Picture 1 (cartoon, rainbow, N blue to C red):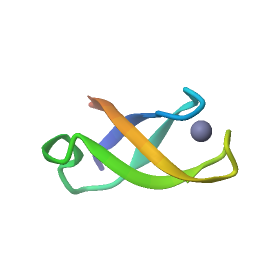
Picture 2: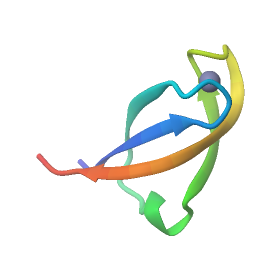
Picture 3: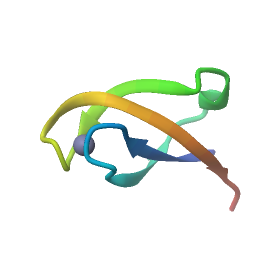
Picture 4: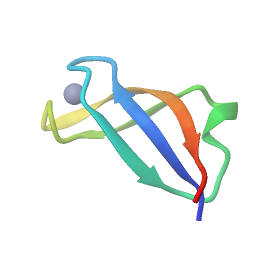
Length: 50
Ligand SMILES: [Zn+2]
């Protein structure tokens, strides 16, 4: 499965989201952040290959 490294634009928390669709075409996604403990915008940093 494809994984993506995301960065919260509010607190800078970085984490990895495993999803099969192409997040790089979006550039930005709205998702729950464990750092902020709320949903925030995340920058899609890179695709991680296994
Ligand atoms: Zn955050």
